[in-house]
Length: 149
Image (cartoon, rainbow, N blue to C red; front, side):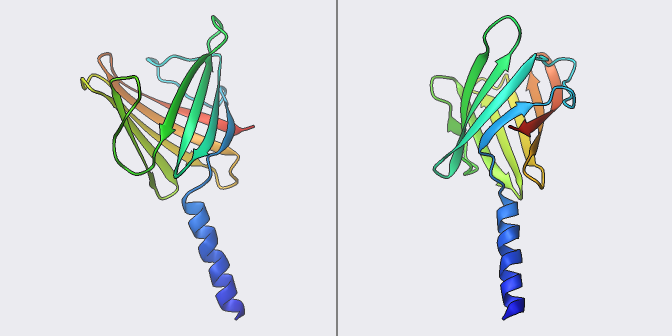
């Protein structure tokens, strides 16, 4: 009986670890983040993530010193299918690959592509985001480190 209980706890832990909870407020660790030379390097960023059915809603606020902040809202459906982004000519797709959230975004004209991977640390206190962008100016990539607030 004891072995089967331990096995069940271990199995549930692996399932939970397979898809970490991204919900909460995250703050960009600008000292540990690496921006490509072609990317904008903001004064600071916050990311608020909340559950929305089987997916997540996100609200990204970027502080750049010249405004009170630029807010970008999004949604991760997590079904691996491209969905149109309301009010834009964009579509996006997101899915889990093990414990990593993959999100791809593209413009209808094919002039912009974005590939993002979010990996949550084992203790759930940090997210590492790798971002690859391909547009008319070329290719660039960044690694952003987010700390749970």
